[in-house]
Length: 250
Image (cartoon, rainbow, N blue to C red):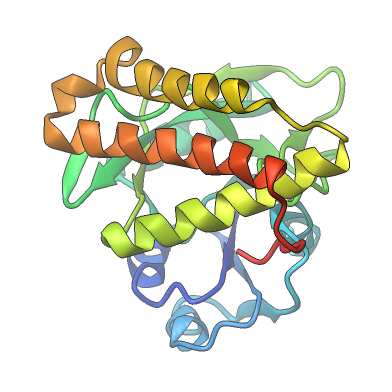
């Protein structure tokens, strides 16, 4: 049995595409944190398992969803992501084979309708795993799934498609929110970078995305995405030097 867990807030523009792509699963769980649009109304057409709750960060929200799941296997996807036919088939096959306990799945970004083959992060994230013994960290952002020490982790080649931004305004909004949340976490760890360090970190993010990952092969969209990554790193550092009032609302 497969449970799909999704956390949402004001994802009416994304959620139906996401839910349609996983309606073959045995169970779909949606944990919403105060949507004021039609997110819940749309989600209710695909599942009866919807929890409306406060926002405590990504880790807490995903743990809430995981705690509600009943499946032997759990697939974690975001509301702005989609599972294609190839990935669906791969998931069904590895569940039937029952060889590993968890699987890393690559994320392929789609920006303004274009799949970015190079600018997407090369890192495969653990998105499919056996429920028994698994739990999420309490991190506000960049949460991690914690598995039993003896868990065997494998990987899939088929990717999740991530529709990263609706438009440039949405990209800048997310950039601001993520940089604020990450800066607050680092400030709590008593870490404050130098201004030179901030510039170096921002430059490195652009260099890695556009040159090392060959984002230039994705055309102008690859350049724009590299700039967004650079700006997020820059503002994260600046917000540590010049702190805002604490906020982890995303």
